[in-house]
Length: 257
Image (cartoon, rainbow, N blue to C red; front, side, top):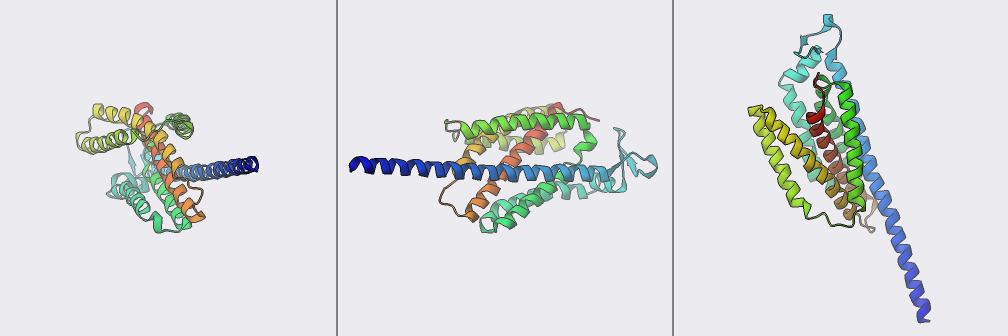
């Protein structure tokens, strides 16, 4: 009788673990799907606004940049008027709104807010198509994608506890932000190079760290709403890691027009 009970308990444990593994895979797949949709929206918005802002017709150009790119009236407004500060800061405001309010929002509202944020980031990144060649943007995107996949896979599969990385990575992130603000006024190419190198290392570490933390956030007892909110916030964290690593690599290896 005792043997039967042990066998029954063992089978129940295996079934429970299988249920957790299946739920975890579905949860992580949802995180990556949300992130992929966000990246796609960012890319589409960036291309759309870059095409609206530039022209190859000298007769319809409103201004010409030193690199030979010709701007439309819309491009002049987007890149050279005070509107550029709105375009730059609007995503920051929206990401703070989502971070603080996600726990009180419906899953649908959180999704729409995340995707609206991703589209706004695309608008703010449209200037890279004016600054860098399309070939180098494509190359850096694929390098970033391959690096991100490897790092995220490591964070998901490793048995090593990465929580000790958190404080060092946050210190590095704060240092990058401060240095970037200072460099707005200094315009130092050497400082920008250092920011980019350190930034690549920090966001590479954050990719693995955040993936493990997102995995640990999963709880088999969560209902659909809680699980959906966690998936959106996880997607936001990985999205930010990817975008920032892409920008840092573009600063290092992108070919300027």
